[in-house]
Each structure stands twice: as structure tokens, then as C-alpha cells.
Image: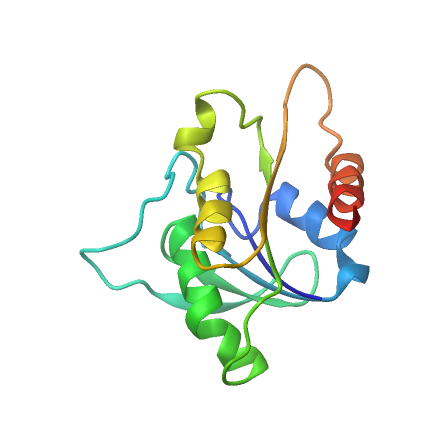
Length: 156
């Protein structure tokens, strides 16, 4: 399986690192994520300025692409242009994973969520997509455990 992995918390976020590690055995993954946090961007796209992309050495290992734009920009660029640069003409991802978001995306928050917006953008492009979030309550967040649960759901 080939996976396009993005988020809305930025390419260096703890959640994307945990989910990236948990999905290592599912197949090839290309991380295309915002260069900085883009929470609450929903389905927003960058329209009035150029969207810059930079190859990035990921803190959690490997290479990825940092996008100076929104999560939806990341999916559009990742699926339509960058994917073919990495995997060849005509190639497209089998799955879009967005997250893991640091914070719950429930209720009305799904309308505003950049994490959910990125997954829906993948679905708009005809790619099966999933958004993953972790509720942050009192105590230490368990990103690694949540990522394992998300991985199990993806295999179902």
C-alpha cells in the first residue's frame, strides 16, 4: 500500500511522528505536511500567493515535503504533483492518512478541523482517506498507543 500522510499540526508534530511510526509496516509512505501548524483551516486552500514546498528531513526519520500552506494544499499537491515526482507518472496514493491531531475533532469541530479537511480533500480526489485525532485531557497524552489503535482500525 502507498500512503500519503499529512496533518494540520505541522511536519514536526508529535502526532504525525507517532502515526508515521505505527504505520511503518503498512507500505510506502510519503509525508507531505504543513511547514507550521495550520489548525482550524478546514478545507481552506491557498489562493492569493504561491505555495512553496521544501524537501524536509523528518525529525522522526526519513524524508518528506514541508508545504507553506494548508492541509488541503498538502493533499492536493501531494496527490496530484509530488506523488508522481516520487513514484512516477500516473502513480497515485492508495490511502490518505491525516493526523494524528493533538486534540479531539468531535461535534462541530469537524467542520473547522484541518485534519478532517485534509482527509475529506483526499476523498474528493477519489482516494480512501482517514483522519486521526487524540483527545487531550488531563495527564500525559499517549500518542504512541493512540497511533497503534488507529493502525489497527486501518487494517480492519
